[in-house]
Image 1 (tube, rainbow, N blue to C red):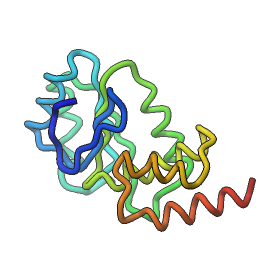
Image 2: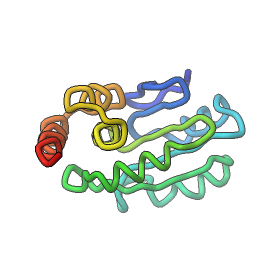
Image 3: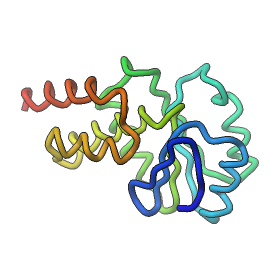
Length: 149
């Protein structure tokens, strides 16, 4: 996907991940993606731009999912399940938070829990999706979950 957003990555051909897009970035995404596109916002309530995003998405004709992840302490396999469900969409998808870090963190948890990936492979998937500073915490969650199985 040719749309540029902060810390943007394309971990899959139809998926763009990264940090907070501008209104112009959302419009460019809509124009590049066509009719069937979805934005998944992982920013927590009260973060900049969250309150305005639903109206902007409606105006642009973009399917919108808000899945708030309020920082590292809010990482969970329940949030990973919700992201997995939101990613089951026929069309282009943009997943963002403030920097892309939460996107990669939740995606790593989903890869481990729902795709039977080992800890290292799940972390690698997370990095492709934007995981950076939260990697030690995510690794700890994955290692703990691996011991429980």
